[in-house]
Length: 288
Image (cartoon, rainbow, N blue to C red):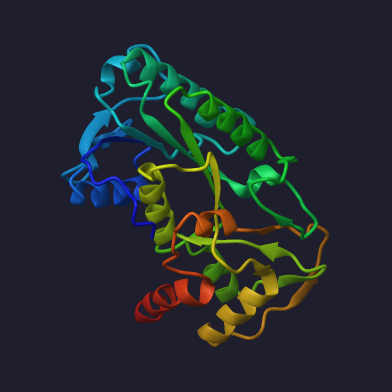
């Protein structure tokens, strides 16, 4: 990782402090930072994360609930429902309310790190995309996330957006379950997939939150975007399953480049699926 990082203790708010946020908060606290975890019901947050009970979709009084003197705010939101209204409420409106509350509470100068998705690019016919590729989302989810990114960009304290793709790790094993169930994979045309291990999601957010001079946008993906059949074949072999049946389709997906992230100094814990999946496979075998 980049070594020119701030060593000064900071006050950090994690808005949307779920699994990834909790792991991030514990790591930041271990480094000596003061960490606040914001969610509607924060009672279950582990020490030393300081609970902050607030609903970002209930803006009345929100500023009064925020701690003062914040240096960083990491925003990891989820929609209340997986439809257009849910994405608008969960991302665009929630982030707008949070930014207004930060300004009203004297925290306008805190750096904002916002978690988005490579889904903002839409369908790219298998092409390579990076931070300079114009996003043209075809689905409401990508459209609303792009709107939320614009909200983050207006934050006066400066913002960093990280677009993750295909997060996997403990409890995020949908592809493993698909292979184990005997599902097929799209071979014609090849459908490209991108992913990032949860360990790297946490580490990237930690790294970006106090990087001395971050770019405004990074793609959070590993080194190996690949055809769907490549990774499913590998997982099937590791599971002792038959090679997945080949299917036809239309959408080819995209190949996301992490060149900017790596050039800035970040080193991946899991550069590809062959590094990230063995521990999940071992756990699966132990539970059989």
